[in-house]
Picture (spheres, rainbow, N blue to C red):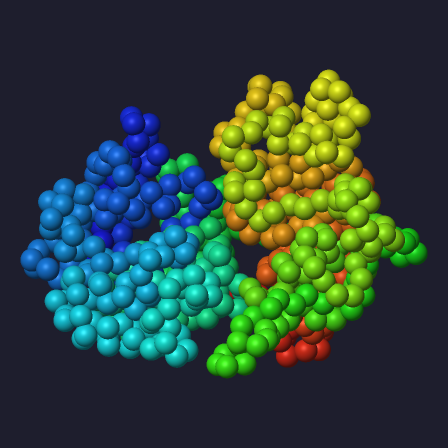
Length: 535
């Protein structure tokens, strides 16, 4: 069978610096090829270059596409820009990684899907709107007519991704470029999106180039896989062959990068560092109709939560987006008004400024995305040492610097590796190194407990394994308690002693991690675990 897309000798450079080094691959009609590798390997740049969407990129090589227009095979890298516009969206479509940034916040979802049909299919505005609603329905969005009138921020993450898929498939393209289409989604939503893509791929007979670092996704979805490292394809072949007998050391390292459990038993009789009883968080909401003129309703985000964390213990909180996980964490940090009691080291929040400030030294937080949680205008020394200026004002500049260096060394960052480390800025580090900086910032004030809010979800699998290993080591050495918020069941299995399963603000199941994950009692827990195993 002749190739739908045949890429030969693709080189991509920016400002004279090469980032993709002469790669070759092809995709047959109806085939699913996965391009796998860590961040910085050149996967996304390769996909963007096929449609010449990588700004200021110098491209050489050929990318011959056997589309339906003009009959003959065309080279995407050399065809005129005006002709390429007819290919983009119509014959080759793309799903981007983060739908919230890819969708226009100022237009409704229906208008954005309809625009593709007006531009490429010549439909009238009314016909395009009707077709857009049907496309949203085809992707499994409930109440598609109502959702078509919604703006992106009014949809959930899964609904936004479905809207992106509807937009990409509007013109029934022959090739779909899917750039990390499920990375930011919960495990159950991820399974739904994957099933949807497979169904639509079979229905329309289109080929798919899947860009991902998720090997489980590749196992479930792809026919063939190409492994990229530092701009080069180091191995490619059928999924079963490459995963069953990987030839390249980098491929073997990717396959062996699943989280590994390495935690010590918690101190059974120790007083808890964090305890909550009947924790409840509610938000006022407007009531519909005349009732809303006189009183407010209430949305309960967390209802009746009881839990405790001992020194050296990890409590995992797992659930889908909107389940109340992050709200529970914010209440535990004393950052939200709440009912019930939350005690840190036996002391409750809300006693006053000085008393609450002392508790904040005991309890620190590490956020999901280190790039957005670290100020780009502050140096490493300022970022890591900021907590000391608040919680240890008695230290002079030299003493603070020593504490900062000690915290950085604890997380594996030293001036031997990074000359002038303290004067560097966050953008000068990789994603995994930035997360280590975030951990150092939390450790520098010598806390007893860390709240870990999706600490590895934005990281590649190999970096994720390193960061989890770091957190496990720090827990053993310091006796730290962790409140771990995640939707990743594998991370819970590797890190947690106890686990809470949340849905719609309620705790559905709570117990030792082995019992809850291996013998789940609630149907929702069984659904989560089954989705994780399938993924």
